[in-house]
Amino acid sequence: LSVEDIPVNAGVMIFKEIMLKGFWLTTWMKTASPEARKEVLTNVVQLLASGEIKLPVEATYSLAQIKEAVIHAQQEGRTGKILVRP
Image 1 (spheres, rainbow, N blue to C red):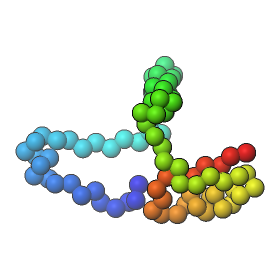
Image 2 (image 1 turned 180 degrees about the vertical axis):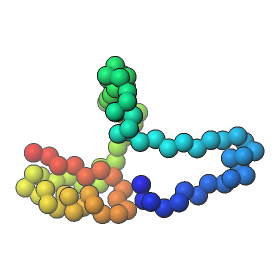
Image 3 (image 1 turned 90 degrees about the vertical axis):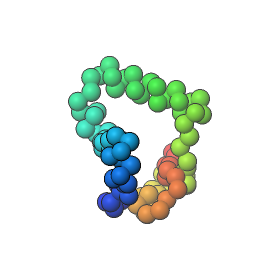
């Protein structure tokens, strides 16, 4: 999402018959059936709950600090999520 070109080795893609395809979750959500969305959500929640997938958290803010949280979230080069807790 940085809008920078992706460094891809064309020779490797050609000779190993590798294909590169983009994915935009918003588009998928608009076209997926309710059942498919539910199945994917259930799987993702299970992976997160089991610890198999970990989402790094860079900072946590209170609701009173919402402005600081938004400013932090908009910064480039973050290493994790910015959370807001009530």
